[in-house]
Image 1 (spheres, rainbow, N blue to C red):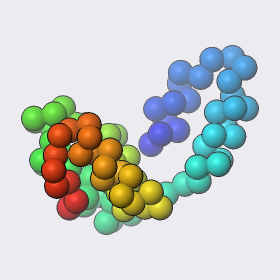
Image 2: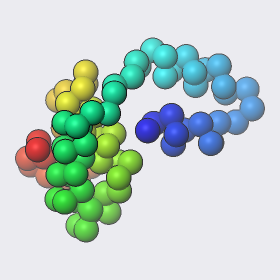
Image 3: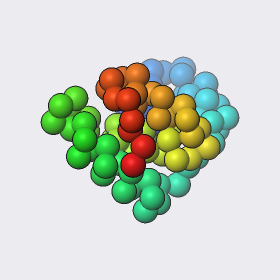
Length: 86
């Protein structure tokens, strides 16, 4: 998801640095658990906070994947939620 959002805005000369950044981060496969969690985020925050599918998938992947608590903290900070785990 992040790749799809970032790559269209890369300026000439930024390709190698951007690629290195994403390689260093690694990838998280979007699976059923992440999909369900993203759906829960959408149900809770779409209308009130304008959360869209891409945002929900990235937050869910971060909350469940290798970045665990950081993703949940990011949702809490951005959307003012005190409890976002699905």
